[in-house]
Image (cartoon, rainbow, N blue to C red; front, side, top):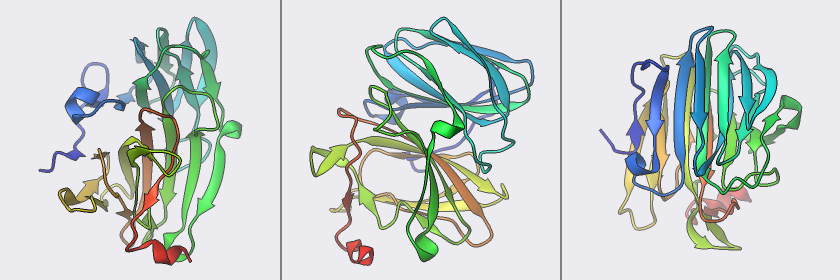
Length: 265
């Protein structure tokens, strides 16, 4: 199996099904975990030298960070529903969570100094936009874009309708060449509705030294260390994915594949 495709494990004692670190991914910045918690189950983590964005994929939980109690957040029954809630925890702090219902959470991390206060990111603070046209239409929820405070993290979730393409035309962000392109590692956490489906994702470079096409099932993570990375949702299956990006500079500047940029008009 490709090293870029990471399958979920059975939940461990803490409920964790994904544990992607810079060391396991073979890169420098992005860390990503997913937990599936039962009602009443608790979780606590120290952030160390990394900031964290905890995204409520489903369910409700009582949360705190940096010594502050933020009460109950969440409420959607699946990530395909709108209105995501998230918790931001700075570096050199602790965050905690107690599930009030069964819930699924994603923990997105990247290097930081701890310069910002903890906060809850409410649904009304999440920018919503629709990109593309025709079968390239997809719906974006900007949880932690570069216009909102964070030190390294960029976090976004996307709904791609059945039969549509996303991250398309193919683009990349693997060179530290601002203002034209930024270097950002990226993870895609894929969910399918219904869950028996799959998504197709290709990761490739201009010289084709990397060129892999992956079938991502419900719950899989695709690693994008470099290169273009378009993804398609087959007919009959709605695709959700959560993107986490980080690099040496917190700017999202991408370069379109010249072979396909014509379709942008």
